[in-house]
Length: 259
Image (cartoon, rainbow, N blue to C red):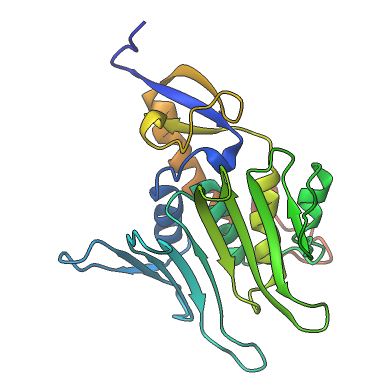
């Protein structure tokens, strides 16, 4: 049955790493509207540039058939080297936004996990045939790190349908904060499906033995509202005052941070 004018046919896809890239606005709009990142616009170039308020970080979205489409980079600071993270075109926006959300969190949790391997071990990823790597149970995703324990190097997350059929790759420089890489792998490990509109053109495969699609009609206002709710939630996080170690009786409940 065809959807009504007020609804949109949506596919809910698992595993999420094979769902296709999704809508870039899921990343760019909250960074601009909720986190205060400024954007540059060149009508002659098919790219998006977003700069953090302190001008130390830059997110670049630039179509590159031969390379990575997304790059988040940060300049060097005293005692902190520069770092970067980059992502292929078909990297799901839900995974990339996990990093931008963690990076822009004004009050990162002190006990946030910082072992990128751990979220994947918990869902059954196993050691790969090569050193210092994990592979998903269905053999379509792989996490590895170059170097050694004494001299660790860059991280790589690769999704592929076969050895010669790569889907996307995420790359994290050796100095990328471990909590950000872990935010990515935690999102990768999340079993919840992601929604896609017209997924037939974006899915790397429709093989029902690899990808599960559940199609349903969703009210258009709910889809639009999801992005608006995401913007509101991140804006509230940015505006929340620092948490006091000693609660004040004069503090109204509405001023407490909520997640």
